[in-house]
Amino acid sequence: MNDTRPVIAQVLHKLYIAGAEVLAAGLARKLVDRYRFVFLCLDEIGPLGEQLAGEGFDVLHLHRQPGVDWPIAWRLGRRIKQYGVDLLHAHQYTPFFWSALSRLPRAQPPIIFTEHGRHYPDQRKVKRVLANKVLLRGGDCVIAVGQFVKQALVHNEGIADQRIEVIYNGVDPAPLDAQQAVKARVEVRDEFNLATDQPVVLQVARFHPVKDHATSIRAFAHMTSQIPNACLLLAGEGQKRSESQALAKQLGVANGVRFLGERDDVSRLMAAADLFVLSSLSEGISLTLLEAMAAQLPIAATDVGGNREVIAGGESGLLSPRGDDRALSTNLVALLDDRDRRAAMGRAGRQRLLEHFTQQQMHDQYAGLFERLIGRYSNVSASQRRSPP
Image (cartoon, rainbow, N blue to C red; front, side, top):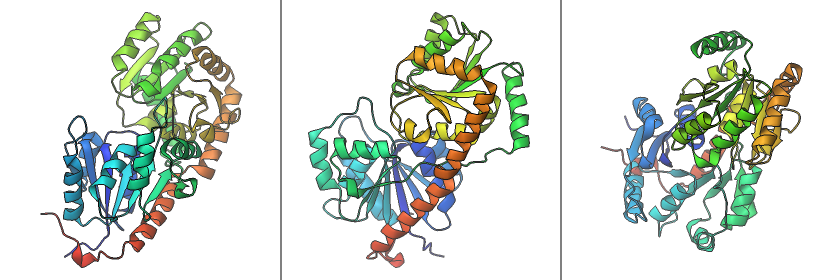
């Protein structure tokens, strides 16, 4: 029997467990009854891609070569034709660039370009501004995950304000119920040999320069002069892990900093922690901040990017300047020293999440966008779509 669902191709660098990738996977899992999703990975399939393939999704590796790999536009275009793609959803700028190039000189299929975050430092490049005027077509849509990201697209990419819609990232507000959270707190603390009342700070982020783990480790080292039995849990993998481990040893806090590696039980880690920290140099709308809010964890984070949109400063968390480990340490100590304040901030953060950042809200907005754009793309009928061999 022919599959008559419209086909959406999600184009990404690779499918690792990170913000943009998790969002793309969640959309496909949520809307699979309405749309057929294909994942086109420029650089690597990745562990999340393997999971999706195991669930029955088509996940393809396009083998982008180092440098400017012009033939990848042709390879991408071939897959678009093969699958009869009705809509391209490109996550981040490079996937958008190659998606747009793959359809030249045609204007179809339409593209959704979702910008999840910005590099640091973020600079305007005239060549990209000019290219965007050619690559973006009338039927395309640009999505920013927050107001900060939207303004960056306007100022640094030259995209008109009225062309950009904001769809906030969202997470499941109840990954664990109260009983599960209590159980997880005991189990995780037992796993890491942590006392019931030991202060635990958690950071979940890939070890990438933009996440600036050095600032959180230095802040933790300052903090231990006042709270010597505190523990810092760092969940994630990446190129800066070994450097971060060396820094913890150099600062004399290696015993208090635990490097957990990649974890698929973040909600359990949240349940075991007393406080969440994020020391990034730049952020869009961080999913891990939202997950901390869902778990009613107070937050100490850097005042960068979209963090101020997520965190109501002084109500659900405390913000400090990027790279300022002393200021971050002061905020960590202030929160760990005041249980009642932490509890109040945790409740306020969860309420803010429910109002603005739930996964259901995000999925509903994307579903409406998919329906609108595919509805316009009416010149491709179900009978014209080709099924892959």
